[in-house]
Image (cartoon, rainbow, N blue to C red):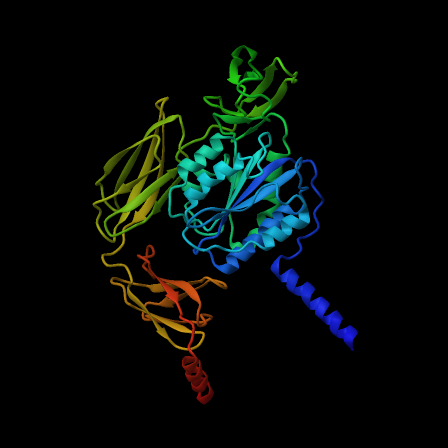
Length: 502
């Protein structure tokens, strides 16, 4: 009898342990990689506990085939919160077992989503010996985000990439596509993934292969390849005082166009720009030193086909009298953009001029509940032009939900009610994002102005949003946070007694 009890307990403990971080599918070990891999983990209150646990499972699934050690892969985690925090230094966990346990023991910090602060903190730690980082290995940043940040990310992210860090981004929410495309290393279709948190395993292999392509290269290699540029990255072999590098590069088919540069020994990366699209370049880098002999390193890089802008026009933040227009990509070969807009139907057209370095503008002073045709035209340095159009709809006056309120219904339920929005409302979308457990969403008809929300026990927190739906587009959304205070003994008795009598 005792043996059966012990066996049952053993099996239950194995099952419970597996529930926390499931064993990934069998993967061949990877022992030919060397690099510092940093996860930027959204640990703020905008992420539910369920989503946080799913991301931890994804991190281990991504990492487990790698070999860890001082001459292999090292990894660490930085939390995005009110204040960024490093979970452990790069050189602390140098075996699969300890890395797995460290990820499993990582706890959510809550707080604000200050991603910009976390990126600046990451820049310090990725090149800090005190944090266990190594000076002569490739650096990779994997940012897992729900698409929301309370501070600016563009400047600290660009500084990281300028220092040779390869940036992969995994967005599990409704992030700004243009902002995240600019933040990721190029080309963005290889470094940016949009996926629901429950579908993260779908991208694991593709992301791992992308990371491996960076950290497997221990010699001169190229990253951020575009139609007119690429970044060269190489191991740090020299210093400012011990020598310099001789760089020679040019098109394979036209040796006469080869260029030569002398580079500081302190450098380990360089951006080459103003290149020809769809051209293979031969690159040779020779470390020159009076102390040691280093052989010349070579590589071949083919630039991408010529980019055309705009290839995408997005309309967002629509109100009764304005909307936001953005486009991509932003190219060095474009001097300016013209944004033409006018109501449909109609012949009235207005024009906005936008500097070629920018990719968005706000169109204002519009009529409510009106459809506009918006055309973005890129004017190139060569004089040629390229245009792309999109339709935009302004909202009706007073198209937002008003006075969202909550009523206690039971031990696990809450009723959300709201005043109807103005105009020809076709229905409402209600979304409840729980800090613990799955989010839920439902649609109701225009005549319904309240819904019952379940799985919200005493002491739980969440966020409820209600959005009216019109014929052409959604209206303005109204959101409120929910915090159900822990139940008193009397409250619990009353609800139990009411349930018994029903």
